[in-house]
Image (cartoon, rainbow, N blue to C red; front, side):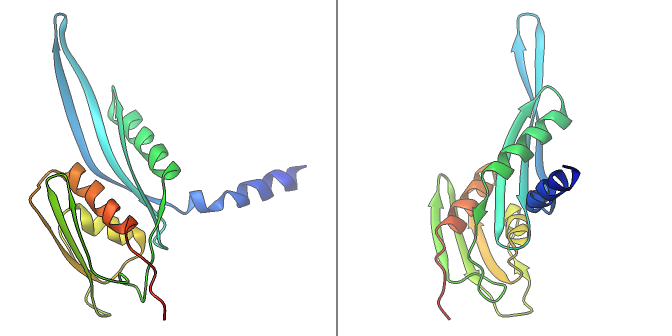
Length: 159
């Protein structure tokens, strides 16, 4: 019986290999008749560096519960990203809300030449070489969702 439980925990092993990075923690204050109502919001990226990545936003009365909720949401909504020779399979342009995203493949050894939250998302997705630009929005939450939507539109490249 013990061997079965151990086997079951090894079965769920990929969850243990996921890395988490907190991108943003916001303190949100709301005025009420009794005073201020303070909550926290956390934006987290989760990935295994092998083509799986997810993002989550969690809210709570304290920072640790907000981060925990965001991590749980991100683990449940993982996206598989096609990776071709450690880079993107093709160029992609996307307009999402106020953000305009341009992501391009790059040759080996270039590194990630993208700014803001895109670098963290691509790094945790397992993409080592890419260049890109985010125009029109400085909102990290919107930019993160825009990058994820762009990664979701990528198609696999045949060799």
